[in-house]
Image (cartoon, rainbow, N blue to C red; front, side):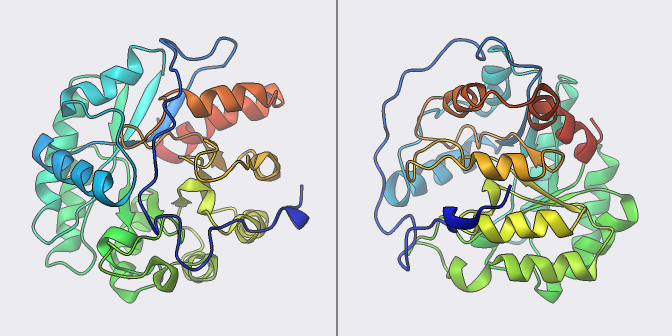
Length: 307
């Protein structure tokens, strides 16, 4: 289905986070909505507790109130105990020298429960970046997580070439927050300058065998990413926060139907201001074709991450 008149969406030049946003205070369930097939949450963040505390302070001041400020050891178990079948844990390094410790941390957490898998991270351009990734892959990590806004790097920056080449050689995916939103004046760089669907397309063209996943459905360029999905079979999107009707009241059902084999469910837990099952309720209400629903909620994640 073509986005057409739906538009790209978006908040205008100041970005979604021109000012902090309020929490909606919506009710939460104690289990995943009935009638849904098995669920893999492909976008769950995990950091050591001191780093989580710093991230949550930033969100409280510049983003939105974090509803689920829990110890790191409880993050995955919160979802698993409520019926999510598996989780994919995503760390990201915001300064040099942090990635090795983060990779070791998430790999150690995953050893305790086979329902958890994790990606490695690295700061683009830091010394020994490839060695850091190779060590992470040796620990069982299933790909690489990057964040253009936090790491102040464009998806087509040459410093990322060695990361992409390393993942291509291993057949492992890169999950990169390369969408323009949420823009905030608190970032050290302007995401609207760094990020765009056009820059992502340059990566897809240059690395045609790279498995590349852009979170949040690429907000705020929905039409542009629908076009890329139609032309590149090495692109995936995840849904994290894009189905919540939090930033606006839209629900891009048409994009979910465009390439049901290339979109993954993800929540962005715990860094959300609303109920953990808010987006799952919205997905359940869409009454998607059963095969498409199973692919969205788990099958595509299994394919991408080798779960």
